[in-house]
Image (cartoon, rainbow, N blue to C red):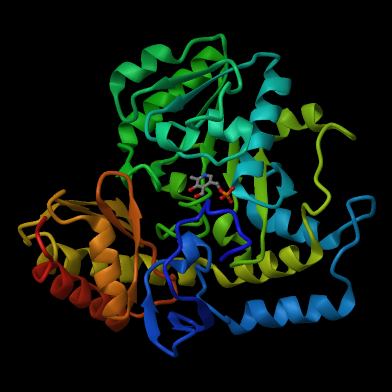
Length: 382
Ligand SMILES: Cc1ncc(COP(=O)(O)O)c(C=O)c1O
């Protein structure tokens, strides 16, 4: 018997504690975590700096409302905008960040249509779900927000759909839920150029790719892009619920007093955690992530790519998709890996998804990849 809705398909164990990249379940079994709680605990579990910041804030005050000044919000916003004159709005999740982006884009441009891409995932509330291309999770929930169009991701022909009636184009530079497809840099730049030429805002959803996951604070920085709006959540406060929308200053008038808000948005505990996260993820930290990721990709190419059931490996940095032949169902592989003491995720198209905490060491990455290799070699072919 459960008093919970069955909307989550859960494994039959519970994680009861965690220390950096190791999780322990209710049977005292330990796991090497390659999930970060779906890209959230980028600094691992029980990170001392984040924990101390939250504990310190807990002793001061843990909720104040947005009726008063917030030096913590100011500080986190400054860290996120790195000296540029962009503005930040705080909320509590990725879907809320995308709702805010959608509202801001519509109000600032006076237009309503938005172009999203196939296999996108932007969240589960009505605006974000309307921008999401996944029939399975949309079934039965329509009608959706009007004015949303879809184009083919990574396809030059999609540029023709960027027309001046659009308020915005929204995309992920790597589709986290959509099968770890990474956009081509030239295509991304062409999308941005077309948006600029047509007076269309470019929104980049960095909810999964952001906060150091790919070796840069934001994945779009690999491609020299300059999005009008960026959305964040997941890793920003390492597990304390938070979301954020960063927008260019030219959009600020559309979000004047009373225009948008959230009771919990920018909550002091979340802001204390986010400040600690952003101060920890400095350039040397990011360089270290890049170095580990280079090693990880080398090792994946050497050990995993040649396996007969592996049809490809995609992603970037420590955001990795191992594409498996459908004869080896990813759900089976995930369960066998759990038995072998490694936690992993899936993504669209029978893809094994790895989002290890960024604090993982090279030898822990090797251990994880070796276990994946062993499990795949023994996989039952259906
Ligand atoms: C790219 C992307 N956008 C938005 C979301 C929604 O975030 P949340 O679950 O915090 O609402 C997710 C969640 O997986 C995501 O991966």
